[in-house]
Amino acid sequence: MAYNALETDRFLDEFTKRHPHMPEFHQAMADVAEDVIPHINARRNENEARILRYLSSPDRVISFRVTWQDDDNRMRFNQGFRVQYSNAMGVYKGGLRFHPGVDASVLHFLAFEQTLKNSLTGLPMGGAKGGADFDPKGRSDAEIRRFCQAFMTQLARHIGPDIDVPAGDIGVGIREIAWMFDQYRTVTGHFSGVLTGKHPTFGGSCFREEATGYGCVYLAQEVMKKRGDGLEGKSCTLSGAGNVALHTARKLIDCDAKVITLSDSDGFVRFPEGIGRETLEQIADHKAQRGRLEALAGEEGWEFHSGEKPWSVPADLAFPCATQNELKESDARCLVENGCDAVFEAANMPCTSAASRVLREAEVILVPSKAVNAGGVAVSGMEISQNRMRLRWPVERVDEELRKVMTDIHEACLEFGEDSRGVDYKRGANIAGFSRLAQVIDYYGVS
Ligand code: GLU
Image 1: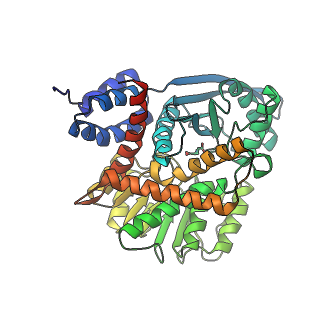
Image 2: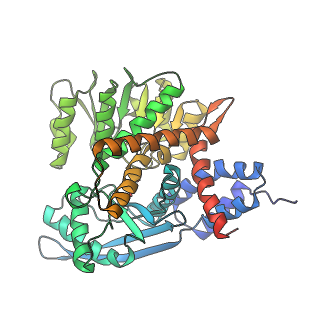
């Protein structure tokens, strides 16, 4: 039978016409299309071709004004969003981000990534992402609390335990989740599992805070094992100093790897001998008080590099844990020149397209966010299950399930990404995430 092959350039041109002025969304879609389209064409799969087009737009985009009062009693306005990308596999699921860089393009990219990531976990979750262009930096606790309440007053009507279950992301931690959960309860009168990442005292899963960083290291262990190697003694550069970076660092140290950098938006700190658990906890306490890394500069064995990123520091492995597009082409060249073996994308899409290309051409192993940071949302999925059953699993159980999810993700990457030249983790994760979702959508008769 005749098969109309999909052309990647044409597909992306049509996509850009439908979604103009969305550079991050375009980048995420192009990254997936370049792996998935050749796979679909090789199998001459007309249904999957139609499903890829179907998935190039979200189910629904909700946009709303958030009006809140600052400490000087002035009314302030921010833009809030929820992009409900696909609930084909389960309730919409994905975090909320409060950051001045949030806009429709960033949330479309994050929601699309989340959809494929959630599919990759093997748990029954759809994909979504939301947030606001609110900057918590410099705001008092009372202002952040009022913002959270105002945000949830608007969002509450669009979410629910059978509809959409948000969680945290950049700028939204356990404290903000508590304030939003309280507001949801107040506005709707329902005490339900409408958010994940809650404190365990009111329905949160233990281990949710650790999950993204620990999951990242579990996956890194699998990748190293596949190469006949381990993490012991490996020097690791990390960016960021938030939840993901700190928990990745903790687990790496437990595995006897050497964590030699952390960063925030002011610059990076280098620990030439590797950081110990005690110092890491000191930094975590300082960050929990919303302190800057620079304030700790001058401590013994610390070097603070103002305004710089850590990618010029020679290391065996790199873990970008901060934000999208933080690792540029020139940074990738530095990594290659310094003989970096692998890059684990712990943040969402931290490598620019040009950086990914440089790494792949130099045969540096690039393990994509969808796989690397899926542990966070996986434990969110377990939190949903526990809320449904009204019970709490012990740490050991959650940790064991998390490890299994990460091992399965590694297997899925091999299934679609391994050939005689080695393992292409990006291709593997993209095709595995897409194929599982396409199978479901096929049953619905979209094709
Ligand atoms: N924001 C996290 C992510 O990027 C977690 C989302 C969730 O737990 O729902 O995957």
